Amino acid sequence: MLDDITSVTLSTALSALSQQQRTTANNIANIETPGFIAGRVSFEDSLRDAVAAGSPASAQVTTTSSTETPGVNGNNVDLGEEMVNETKTSMQYQLMSTAVSAKFDLISDSIRV
Image 1 (cartoon, rainbow, N blue to C red):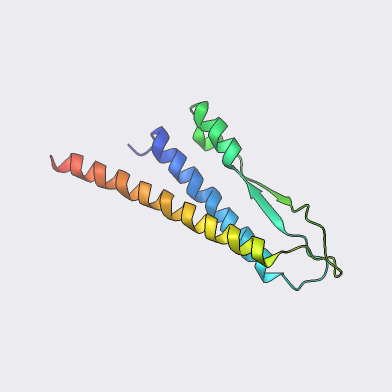
Image 2: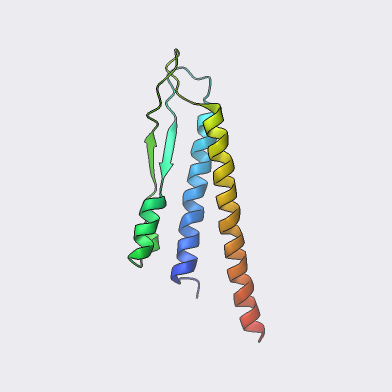
């Protein structure tokens, strides 16, 4: 019952957003590590294409190295950028979680009728 395109899309998005949160946390944790190169997670385009093809579970989450110029110690983590990424990701995660909850509420209401 929960393998419809909406449920799978929401599940895939939540999983990708979790990966994005872990990557941002790792970047922040290594802000003072010499030579550390920040990671960047990308999934939105792949998820959009997978949903359009009717197969959201096939969306790919990719983590690449940031192309930002490193500082003197070879580290390229920008705390301001990481904080913006974390805020954005948290808001997206909350939105997806609310959508999942609403879907379960709808199913629950349907069962009661």
